[in-house]
Length: 436
Ligand SMILES: Cc1ncc(COP(=O)(O)O)c(C=O)c1O
Image (cartoon, rainbow, N blue to C red):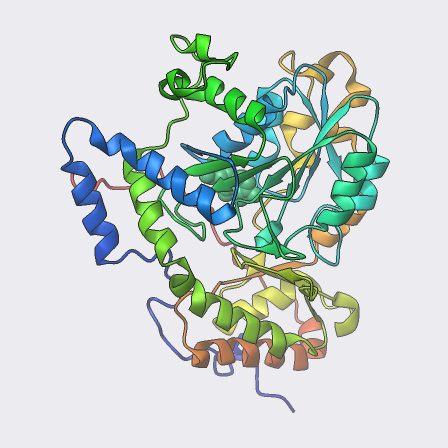
């Protein structure tokens, strides 16, 4: 008989109490120091931080153009604008992602067309991309979800065959690689986020990279009036220097400075997260009821977040919510997927004169059928990223999972199990630390 579950009054699997086990971002003395230094620069020299960051990013990615921006969402908007996405153009996107992958398509008056995610990788399914192509399709946005690269060879081949452009949403990566190529440099444009939870946290910030001069200049014209005079004299965008195209996407210099400091040490700062998650993956590989998302040998992945799949059928049909509730009772910080599926959202399911499909409801993105993604979504388990956790804590997580798996049969008949909702962050109640 396996140990008694905590839900039945047994001892909890998690006994280690590590206050900083999941701490992120990790800011050290030099991060704070750099903010002070930048703030004390005179004559607006702090604006140069963006240019220093740009230079370092270009060198790292060995790419011709890098444009720091205010956040990852702005990078994606800039990318779509750079490609000339306009009214009625279709852009193929995953539904299983954060909203910023999809919503900038609307900002360009384009129509997002949702494609299925591959249950083996959680990433957009190349075969389904191809099925969704129409004469109106102009581009594909792929997301390397949680830091695992998409199947870029297949995606680039499809894009080439149909003359489509590819934007890589690299919000979850720094240096993931696909067959030796760094993500963000494989498609036409790469977009990164440096928001506080990200692997390279600048509190806010983003990056647009490309090797195409025209795309770079268009992105500059969209939101960087201050860079327009610096464009080459033959640039057709230089003349817009007094107006820009209506957006101001310049990165905050303080964020640029923090990102630079974090960039110099990202390997060290992320090491414990990677070691812990790779160990967890290995230890969970052969546990009934759990499927680990595998990394193919030809990829190097980052771990922005960590997801497992629950296999109900292997545990006698035990519902996922009961499984999670039992894990939570053991002290594990686990839950259901926190992203919502995009194609189910009201914005894609209502008539609204703002959107191109308004006069042709058949074309509403919300009418898309994504049975594979919807089934997959019901199986996702979230785990912490163990950024500073000891091996001891990771081992207790593994033991906690094994304990619940071993008691699945008993749990099945237990009715009073309620999953704890991990609440979304609510900023409204924040007490200002300085202006109190
Ligand atoms: C997949 C994905 N794309 C884009 C973004 C947008 O980045 P930002 O928050 O910097 O605007 C995020 C942010 O969480 C993301 O997760």
